[in-house]
Figure (cartoon, rainbow, N blue to C red):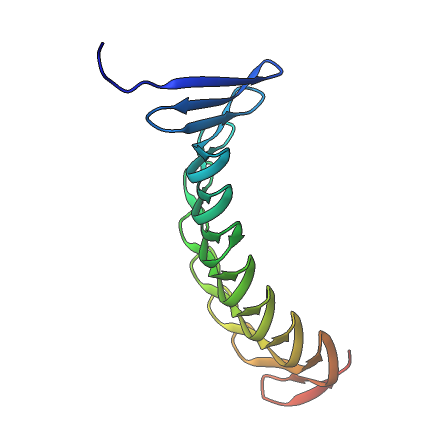
Length: 212
C-alpha cells in the first residue's frame, strides 16, 4: 500500500448551505462560509477554538484581516486591510484585549494615529496625523481618557490649541492661536466648564476681556 498524507474532510451544512469545511491530517484547517457560500475565514481550530493565524475575507473574497488567536481569543498581532489590499491597522492583542503598541493608516500608507493600549483602552502618549503626514494632535491618555498636556496643530504644522485635560475634561489654562501662530485668546477651564476671566489678544498684544 503506498504511503502518503491523507486528509479527511468533514462538511457541515446548515439549511442546506455549506458553512464550514474541516480538514484533518496535514493541518487542522477550518474555513467558514456565509449563507451565500462565500468564504469568510480560514484558520486553525484546537479543541473547537480558534488558534494561531486566521485569515478573514471580505464578501468579494479579498483579504480583510490576518489575526492571531490563542484559545479562542485574539492574542498577538492583528492586521486589517481595505478593499484595495492596503494595510489600515496593525494592532497588538492579549487575551482578547488590545494591549501594547498599535498603529492605524490612511489608504495612501501614511499613519493616521499611533499609540499604546492597556487592557483595551488608550494609554500613554497618542499621536494623530493628517493624511499628508503632518502631526495634528498629540497628548496623553489615562484609563482611555485624555489626561495631562495636549497640543493641536493645523495641517501646516502650526500650533492652534494647547491645554490640559483631567479625567477627559478640559481643566486649567487653555490657549488658542491664529493660523499664523499668534495668540488669539486664552482662559481657564474647571472640569470642562469655562471659569474665571477669559481674554482676547489683539495682533498687537493688547488684551480684552471676553464674555462667555
